[in-house]
Image (cartoon, rainbow, N blue to C red; front, side, top):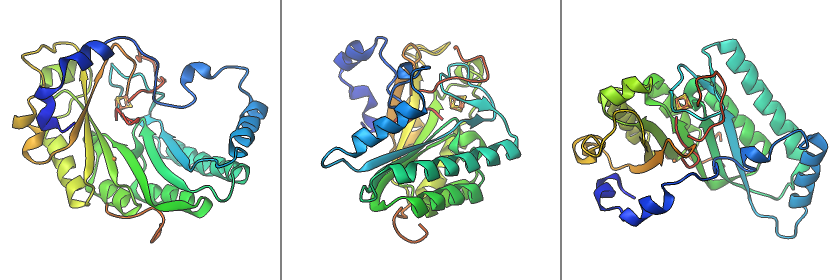
Length: 283
Ligand code: SF4
């Protein structure tokens, strides 16, 4: 749905989906995890699904849980931290996990989808972004035309992040916005001036990433019909991203490079489980 078409959304969709639903941001979903899901079960499930005739291509999701601050609506699995050492250690662990998983999966299974979510994937420095992307390519057969998406938080984003993502083959961006109204932003502890969002969109366009969606949320404090985002006067004036409206009542949440080529709530606590759109999304 183009954001410029937001006003033409079928109202029936809102009544259909305006209710509590299961988390859809991860698979298996969070409520299926528990003490019974141990290493042995995990390995046996991988073996069972990998051994099926015609096992489908792989989709890889990388969760980067670090954020600078906590948005009060957030339901993601995140940690407020700027500790570079901690972030670097986490990156080491992600790569180590790939080393464990790779032998368990059929070598002929191509990776056709990659998603980085969080948290804030761009809490990784540009060199760390390249390192993780390179490590993935070194261990998996990533399709030349893999769909590779990443969640972006414009607030701490730098141009270098976007260029590193584009060089690493990302071709889809999901950008967290939630609401353009400063009053709403302050109420949810996510102050994000419009210019910051527009700058991020400019960098994404400069990097050649053409699949972009904005996460918008309804149900936040101070939101009314009258103050709903007016895309024609804001983001859509410079680009045409798609919108992913989500509700705070449901726990929620897309370079021109290619992956296979060249290089390659209640959440006032410090941890949470995420639901940011394609997820992936919140960011
Ligand atoms: S909404 Fe996104 S940026 Fe905000 S705390 Fe949650 S994961 Fe971090």
